[in-house]
Length: 105
Image (cartoon, rainbow, N blue to C red; front, side, top):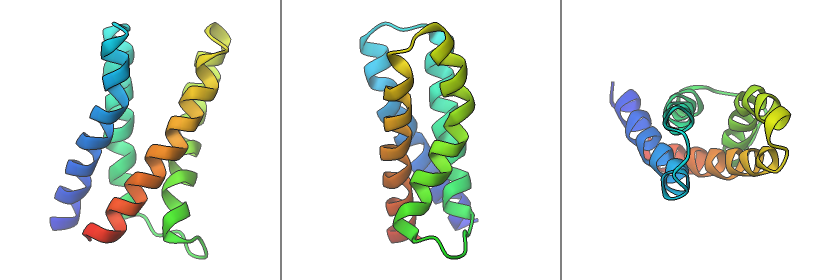
């Protein structure tokens, strides 16, 4: 139960980090909610999954990027400039989530 609670708190923090620039840019509310939920659930998955043979610090980036790929594909059809930003944010936030999970659990 402790691990789930920690992963949820980390997810809330990662989600807030991702949506702050979106709020400042006054983006669509659905896009903001979608981004927040993406990182909330990605955090739970990253912290609670074990990938044998993958370093703990790399696990978060791999999982986060893999789960962001469908979003990247959809967004790239409408806005080609946003796709690399989403991918980079997925890698960075995924790594931070993995690091937080490693040191907090």
